[in-house]
Length: 106
Image (cartoon, rainbow, N blue to C red; front, side, top):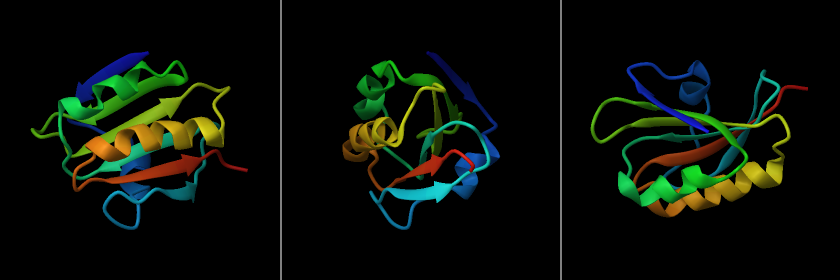
């Protein structure tokens, strides 16, 4: 797994925010992968253990502190169940951030 911090975020993360704090909404995407995103402030270290999931290919988060955007790309073998498991792991540490899932395009 690669974890990058940068001033940029995948446009996908901006367009896939959930409907409210702690809500997991599933949005159809255009990629061939599942993504899990957090939009909004969250508790920093409270989600670190979630990055140990073996189905995570890559994660990108904003460099502002506390970080306000996080996008996680699953491996090509990832499923909706895997995305939901990662989203469920992120929810307790998401604070006021909204957790969402973006499905692969059809």
